[in-house]
Length: 425
Image (tube, rainbow, N blue to C red; front, side):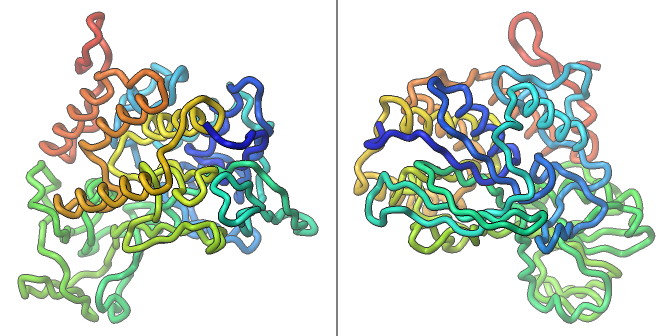
């Protein structure tokens, strides 16, 4: 239980994580004062689509991430927040517009708009009292309309939910030499732009695997370069898997195998960097080789537990995962639950890091680890665990994707009267 009374909470960002935090905070009794700062003109975070990859909104560049034809790679039946399911008329794998509509409906249904200040950028966050683990936070904001008024407010606690898909990784050796078209996947919008091209896609993570199936409909041929084990799923006929890129040349690439390929376009699906430019160094948060340090349970700022960063892990069932994280946060901030000592939290973080390193797992990648993780958080928070059916369908879809990258999204799922998933024709 917190050693101070938390009465005023700041939430940075009105994407899915920020909206989830605001919803759970608003359900408390008594309800704390809640302010959600969103730098763009609407809610939705990465689910907001624009034809322009770089949305320059009054001097603030926001990298869009949606693209035409994008559908979720997880079924809507397990995607939603508690007590607010997706509309049953939707397909299982739904288009990005429908996900944004869900977030808009979620916001309206729970009256979250009242807490949100749009077009407001968080400029700087600093602890009120350095060294005090239960410090409040001094938050400086700037309105991006009219006089660009700056304001500083003090909050008892803060939720950092600014997302981590806005700073693309562009680190591919020799990329500056290439004479053709180069883009990161954040700039990809329409496969028609690659009609008739020989294309090199670098990276076979979720974005790379998804985009390749759409791009193959227009491109002449695609080389899919990645370091993973050979993708054994059914892939489009005009896609060839190749080894990692050793270096980019003026006309294409030299692969680790020594083979040289020539292409018209290069599309980098190489991920994103964590970035928290508004957090002052005194906040105690840093990024070290794709690891955000130091976070207890990938969530609490160890130095100052009145700051949390939900949604940092990847390869997860995102919204239920984040919701469970926030349930733990609220049980500590407003309930009777306590965190371990500072020393024990540091030790836990180091143990997690060592275990991951020994197994070759990156800092915040979850995958199968997400299920014991959310179970542990539920136990710590004193709330029910998620039902096994979430994991069951998640695994079912993972296996279907591994078999057939092209057609797995054609499947539809429903719960039968025995509480088991079945495909719907």
